[in-house]
Image (tube, rainbow, N blue to C red; front, top):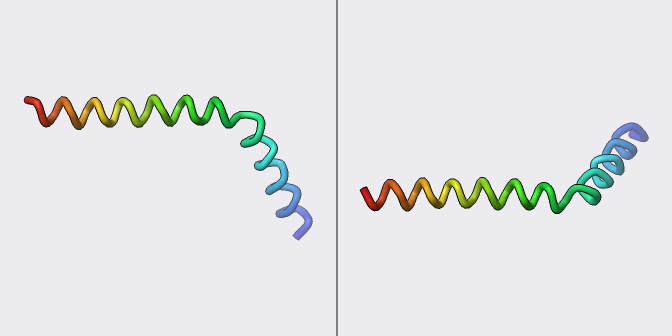
Length: 43
């Protein structure tokens, strides 16, 4: 149980430190998906 708790705290720390990078990558993925959808509708 302690190992799970420590692992969860470690994951929370990683997300807390890198949330802006994760948001940046997700924004690019969403933009590429939207561009693909729009391109397929316009052809």
